[in-house]
Figure 1: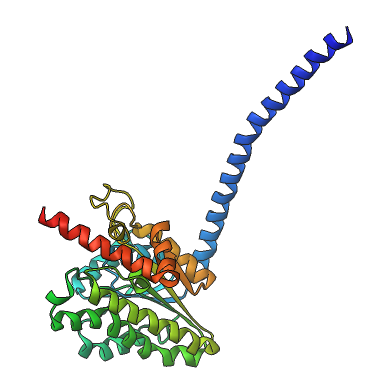
Figure 2: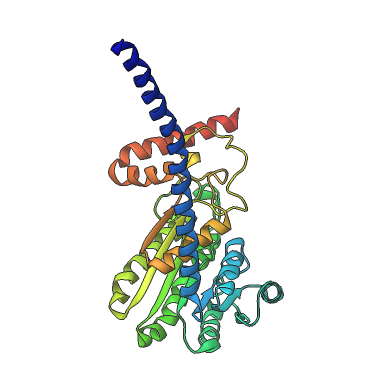
Length: 324
C-alpha cells in the first residue's frame, strides 16, 4: 500500500516541477528583455543629455547618416554646425529640423559650405566653423567618396580626388581645429570610416588605400592628443544603407560577402545610435559589421596566406562567371 501511495506523489511532484519550469523560462526571458530595453532607454536618455549644449560639427550632413545624426543631436539639444556641398539642401535640412522639434529646447543649426574635394577652400571653411560658436566640442567626420574598378583602369586624377575626399579633407579639418581644442583641453574627434580601413578587398584599391591612410592618421593622433584631454574615436562599418535588410547576394564567393551591400549593411539609425554610444563612452575603436568581416580582419592579421588565397580564389571565380 505504501508503494502505491508514493508513486502518485512522485508523479505529481515531477509534474509540478515541469509546470514551474515551463512557466519560469518565459518569465525569465521577458524580464531579461525588459531589462535590456530599459537599459537601452536609460542609456539613450543619458547619451542625449551628454550632448546638450555641446557644439557638434557634422561633415556631409546631407548624406543618409549625416541627416540621421543631425536629427538625433538636434533633438538632444546640441548646437549643430552642419556642413555640406549644397547650400540649398543644407537650408532644407535646417528647416526640417526646426519644424520637427521644440524651439524652446533646441538650437537653430549653423550652416557651412564644406567640400573636402576642394582643398583650396578648406582654410576659409575651417575659419567659418570656428567662428560659429568660438569653440568646438565634437566633430563627426562623415564624408566619403567611393570607386569600384580594377586598379589599372582608375586614373591618377580619380586617385587624387579620392585621397582629397577621404584623407586630405578630414586631416586638414582635424589639424585646423586642434589648436582650439588643445587650448580648451577638451574635445572629441570621431571618424566614421569604412571597414576597408582595416581590410581591403579587390577592385577598391584606391578607396581602400584612402581609408587605410585616414585610419592610420587618427590612430596616431589619438596618442598625440590624449594628454590634452581630447578623445579620438573611429567607427568602421561595412556599408551604410537605407535598410539593413534586403535581397541576398547573388555571388557565392567568400570575398564578395566581405563587402556585400545587402543584407550585411547597417541602417543610418543603427549607425547613429552607435555614434552616440561611442561619444558617450569615449570608446577608441568600434567595428560595426557581421561576424564574417570581423573574422576576416583577424584572418588578415594572423593567417595572411590563407586570407590572400581566399581573396585570389574569389577574383578568379568572379572572372570565370563574367566570361560565362
